[in-house]
Image (cartoon, rainbow, N blue to C red; front, side, top):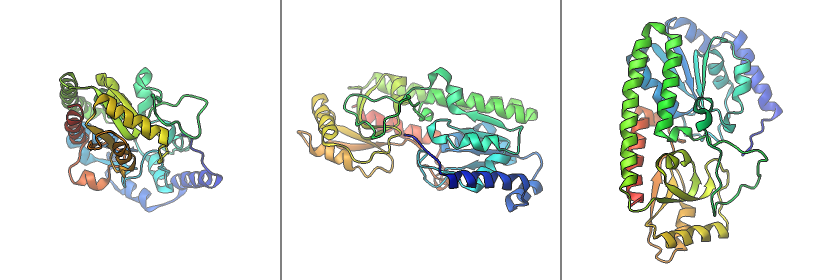
Length: 327
């Protein structure tokens, strides 16, 4: 899915960078008047935000952490405001996914006023572990096919990738704040132990599963997760697809797969209207499958954070759902 930015939007970015360099804005004043040792940290999505909080630990009280996608906007449709660009331009540490949806970041960093900032691109951190988007049998192709393969952006949905990302975050924080380097290292180690324990829980659930195929009447952003545990899947669309209507052929194929595999559940992601999933069920022989939802953390809000939602709590809930789906 390609994103193109208008001349107007490019001009807005340039204006925002000019504002960051020269204006005496309220945000600039606030930072100037704050503790000079306070770390200014900007993340794009919720998982990054939560990982940073856990690695900072008690030192989070000495940091100002911003999550740009804090109101439920999907990563694939997000466009930064001038204020967002300003926050990125002046921060000490910036974390972003680094896929096609983050095409705006290059210009933002090029014009950043803080040339000493630490930058973490999750796709770069993954290296060869980053996967290309995959079109499996029966999946509806996008209307606009890219000539070049696109990388699957949803790296955070692998607990193994989360552990690797936390190492990168701890390393960046240690460079920014060497006085607390040991604290960041220890916090990352403790948090990675929790990630590894949950990873073991997923592995055990799959090993003891009655069947090992998931079927999504929706987009499929869970490639990294299913590959971690050797699961197979079918889905209506790839994870980054903008499509919302499934063809008759796609519905029929998926309904036939439900029947052939004897599946008792059809899956969706969070905030789905479940229309496609329901249509698939209506076209099966039994017509009595349940709909289950896995949370891809693409719509987590600041209100969710305030209510105690964490990366681990979502992945724990996803494990419960997965166990039911694989019965």
